[in-house]
Length: 274
Length: 322
Image (cartoon, rainbow over the protein chains, first blue to last red):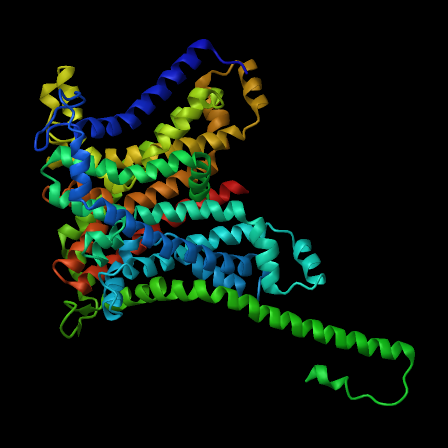
C-alpha cells in the first residue's frame, strides 16, 4: 500500500494519545488509592509512603468477600438459565420455524431498545407483591426476562444460518426434536453460546439500576450495585473510595484480559446485532 | 374431514390404486408429524416467552396503566386520566431532563463516532501492527468495567483538585480551572466526557473492522489518481462504512438517552438539575417522591422518545444495506 511516512507517523501519535487518554484515569485511580486515607492527593503524584493497606481497608469496609460471593450467586442464577431458554427459543424460531414464528420473534424484537428505567417502577411493585424485594431473586428473575430480546435475537441469528440438510439427515436417522437440538445443534453452537455468555456475564456483573432499586442490602447486590453503596458511604475518603473501586473493577479486568479475543469479538458482534 | 374421506374404500383394487392410498396415508402421517413438531417447536419458545412476558411485557403494560393514576404506591390509587401527562408538559424540570438527554447525544454519540472515524481512518493502514493490536485491548478497557466505576474515576479526575485541573494549571490556564461537575454551565458536558471516554474504543474498533473489509485496490487506485488522504476518506472510506456508522450511532444514542449509572454516580442530576436525565427523574419520582403515576407517565414518554430517535437511524442503516 502506498502510504507516506508522515501519515504513518501521525497515525501512530494519534493512536498513542488515545491510549494514554484511556489509561490515565486508571493510573490516576491507582495512584490516588495509595495515598494516606482522608487526604486529597493531587494528580498523578506517587506518594512518599504508599499506603497499600488502603486496599485491605477497602476490602474489609466493603465486605468484598461477601460481595464477590453475592455477584457470583447472581451470575449463576442468571447466565445459565438465560442461555438455555434463549437457545431453545432461538433454535425453534430460527431453525424449526413453527407456525407463527415471525410474529413471536417480532414480539421479542420489540423489547430490544427498551431502557431498563422504563419498567423499573412496576418491577418494584411486582417484586414486592411476590415477596422477593431485598433478595437476589429480585435481580435474577427480571434480568433473565430483560435479556430475552437480545439473547433470543442473538441465538436465532445463529440458528438461521444452520443448513436444513443437517437436520433432515438427523431426522432420517431417527432423531427426535430434542436429540436434534442437544446432540447436533448445541455442539455446533458453542462459539455463539460462549460469546453470548460473555456478554450476559458482563452485563449482569455491571448491572446497577436493578440492584440499587430492588435490593437494599449491598451484600446481596451485584458488584456495580455494591460500588454505588460504597460511594455513598466512603465518598468523602477519596483514597479509600479509589481503592474500593479498583478492587471492584479488577475481577472484570482479569476476566477480560484472560478471554480478550472472545471479549472483543463478542462485544463488537453484540453491538452489530443490537 | 377431507382426510378421512379417502379411507372408506373396500374390495379389490388395482396396484396403482393401492399405492396411491398408501401415499395418501404417508402424506397424512407426515402432516401429523409436522403438526406435532410444530407444537414441540412452539413449546421450546415457552420458557423464554414466559420470562419475557412476566418481566418485560407485563411491566410495560403496567407502566402505561399506572400513568393514568395518582398513586403513592401504598394507599388506594385514583384515576386521573391524562393529568400526569399534562403536568409533565407543564413541568420545566421534566422537560429539562428530556432536553438534557438530547444534549447528551452530542457527547455520548457524535463525539465518539466522529473521533472514532478520524482515528480509525488514520490507523487503518497499519491495523495489523503490534501497536494496533495492543490498542485493541487498551481502548476496550472502558467497555468492560462497570459504568459506576467509570463515574467514580472521572468524578475524581474532574474534581477541583483532580488531574484535569492540575494539567490546566500546569500549562498556565489557571483561569479555566473549576469543579467541572459542580458548575451548572460545565456539568452536562463533563458528564458527556465520561460517556465519550466509555464509547470511543467500541466505535473505533467497529469502524476499523468495517474498514478492513474495503478492497485495498480501491485505495491504490485513488492514490495513483492523485487523491490525498482527505479525498480518499470522503470518496472511499466514509461510504464503505455507512453501516458500521449506523451501528455505532444506534448503540451510543441509546446509551445517551438511557444514561443513568454515570449521572447517578457523578452528579445525581445536579447542580440545579443541570444534568437531570429522564432515567434519573423516573427513579426519583418513583422511589423518593413516591409519585408512581407521574413516574410512569414520564417512562411512557421516555420510551416513545427512544423509539422516535432510534427507529429512523435504524431505517437509514437498513437502506444502506441494499
